[in-house]
Length: 355
Image 1 (cartoon, helix red, strand yellow):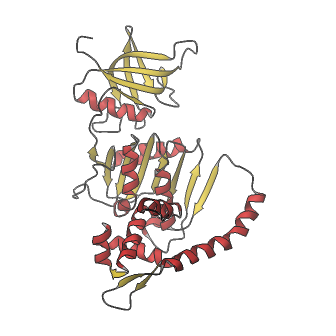
Image 2 (cartoon, rainbow, N blue to C red):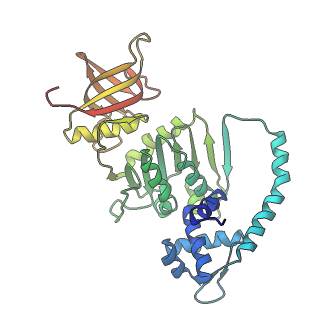
Image 3 (tube, rainbow, N blue to C red):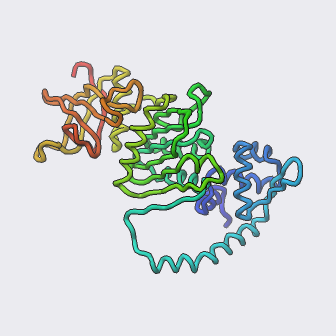
């Protein structure tokens, strides 16, 4: 029984194809040989991006770019040829993989040095697919299209996405709806930075992303101690410099958040909409280890710098002010030290005005 279209697409993704590479390659297969503009219309991928993808597919032996004719055409190699290329590559790779497997030992903390912009974008796409709670990402605006599908998918999983696009004027005609929870723009260059759930991520120097001949290298990391440092740099040094371009709408309540910053963002949006809100906090008391770990009260205020206007006293402050049993508590997220309570889970729900 042959594979259906969904199975073929999933198989190509497992081989390292991005979603747009899959769409482009399948269009080229259907058309046999065509101009980039025709392929773009058939696949729904921009013409500029079709050229970029075609070059990568040609390097892998899947297509041939006929740039000696005008206009340039792209021709698919017979699938048998592409499969043979993949098979040869895998067979040549096996001895080296087996050698490394026999000598390796598991490592809890990992770093990877990345040498090419194409690989950086692939790593960003892959890491975004693993996000469960929170994403912070700075990326040049001209490369945003490369990861927009993954950003949309993260939002659909209720992940908080804080996006900063660089190299674009705040006055530009941009649309970030469906790509971020909060999006900001900055004309100045900055490193491409990504964190996923404060545990994994990537940092790439601007020169590596902007210049094809740069000798700079990117670092992919998986280290819980480093993640919060990168997030702190992102929110403390760069996010405040950018101009707010988009903010999501308040979610329907009740809603539960494992990302404390996500809870802070939504609490801010609901208070600004004059929605009375109660908060149930699960966590630990920072001053009394024997105190109850659950707090349920009225949300009185929020201190934050995720959305304008900023209400925090320092850039990375994210605090919920909750009144419970005639006492007022300051609640922070993981690693809180100036607040009264460190939250691991926050539930926000609407309340009657009379409460």
